[in-house]
Length: 109
Image 1 (cartoon, helix red, strand yellow):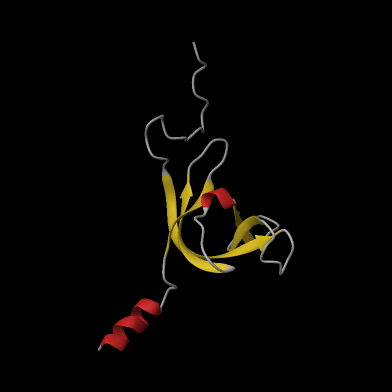
Image 2 (cartoon, helix red, strand yellow):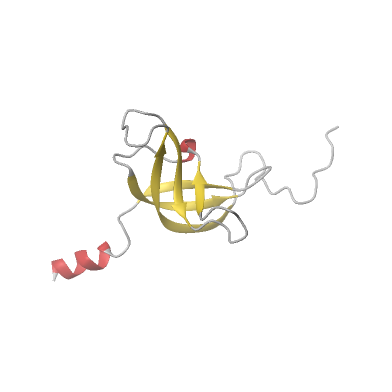
């Protein structure tokens, strides 16, 4: 018989989608193994806004949680997803930069 779940574990039960804590639009920047070399592998992605108590001013995102895109920077809808043993950020979909929707509407008028 498996042990009872420990308090504080918030993973979704099997067969259910993971629980999303928060969503936001963020500009992801690719961090490469060798800076400036477009053929080197991607180590991680970052976006500004790490936790205030941390030593880093950026938040790190694993490459496996970001869909492929061209270039070194792109805007994504990000979701903070509950996981075990810790929560993680994942890119849901690529979006237009904030503010361009208003510019597009003004151009149509």
